[in-house]
Length: 345
Image 1 (cartoon, rainbow, N blue to C red):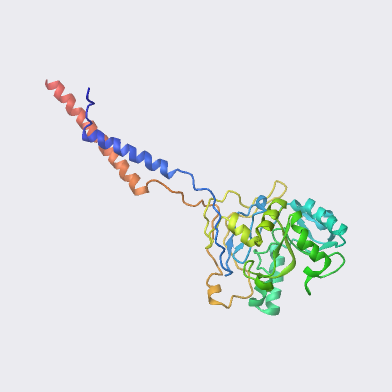
Image 2 (cartoon, helix red, strand yellow):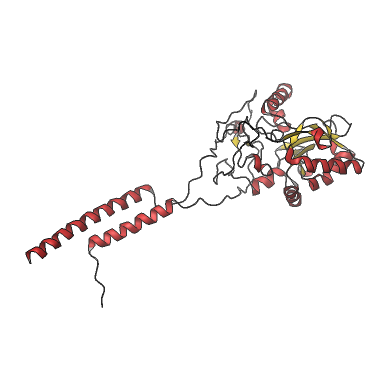
């Protein structure tokens, strides 16, 4: 038996319905999973809020010449260094306490005791420090060895300038050649700590991969698992996190929905805003025009997910709805005509 053929109104109704459903399904599809940005950006200056940067994302949060955190970013679990069994003063995040204690114990046992010269610095402290260097040596020099406020690993509570226990300031000379510095270079990664600013190509004091000058005393806590990955890769921290964890492209544009923004624990009274307006609290400005052009950087709104792919755009959906309504009206007219013919017959 042959199937009854659908009339034009009914066919139009079916097509419109299918089109509308397809568009709605496409428009509500989930955004693609987070992808690492891959290619390392240049060392040009910028002011883009890094993603991820939640307090629980401490092992993958990257700050550098381009990426930063808010001025109000204050880790909720800061602990005094004295509570970690290591010489020195200041504070470090509590997530690093056990490994730091174990590292200090191992260094002492190896005859190379270590201490903390400088730990956590808040935004205001980093502003004063950086601007002081600018006053002394000029912006172009200062930016090679001091991060602008908001861009420092010290503000994360994870960046530490180590020293030899009882040895004083590690900055003069090459601390990496001291017993404590040599021990740290070979062993710190085993306890979750990785040197942030190693020498560059050919032993140069400037490193294009870290966009910073050599600092043998400056280490960043990543946790043992992440530190082992970075160490095995042979990459700098900046390279590894850009390649594997940072959810921004090389222009600072969000490429995946940010699911974890800075949020203080229940023990803290406030948390940084997810998307404040970027600022550049500097006393100087870049002299290189190409750098100055990127200093402000594109602002990223982590609270706004990246646009998801959809099967149809809004105009197509509106057109489908119109066709659907028109087809419905045509069917109603056809039905009235059929009833009229039956009454005449």
